[in-house]
Length: 195
Length: 195
Image (cartoon, rainbow over all chains, first blue to last red; front, side, top):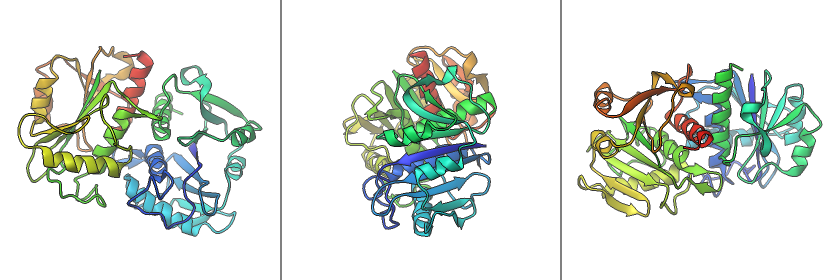
């Protein structure tokens, strides 16, 4: 099983953002939606071995975490607007610290980034970071958790928290990529390595 | 210079598609927009060494080709809706076989796929294809042109045409990827190889 965790600093935590303005009213929700697309879609299918957690830390009521599970999602299309419409619904379902089912394969909660990392802490954790070790020189272990920041990056405090666990920093080289592109590259690399 | 050429079978050729329904009314225009995103955006910047040609073959008036040039585009955002709004405008500008400037870095014309390939024929051409040679085993030459089909693939007739030129088939392995993901992977690979 592969897991991706996206820390979105500005992704809003109210369902009333506009589907016609994901970058502005959604707090770069377009970026979050493309991450879900990159994590789960292949040609004519869904990656049934992959989950993506999106941790929204924008106003008015952070944090909210939504997970899309590739083994069971249904009726979700790969375009930004459709994914965003499910995020809208999931935000409205986030009531407490426990996961609430939004629909098949989509769960929502008031969990924080640190709550999610605690839940996944028995897996090897890899933080995508420009100062990390180059991907080609790293052995990726089974059931990896890949942690990514948004366009502003992962806050120091959150990376310090991850350091308590089985953790390594990965770099994708000298070019700095969009979060969604990092996910596509990691999936490609894991496909090649059969992990 | 890197060039990507996307053959979209169903991408519509009238500007009256709805920005609220890119997959349906746009003929999978969401897919086309994600290809533009994957070709041109890096974190906090644009790939100034890259062009992407999108060849629209859907109703009512095919073909229309639009090119986004990384060295000069301005005021375009990486989200599907914004890219689609520029495609709408570019479709309205496509009048004859010559390129018409839509705005900085966006040109439009009634060129066909074969017209575009003829224009790029002095470069090495690589067609992404599941039965191609595996990427890791291919040397990519300078100024490559990468040709991709959409979710249905490149029509036989068009691939036969490409065969007249300096042409090779590339495969990305056993997994079949979305066109936009193929572009991200090719860009990553070219970055690593410094091509």
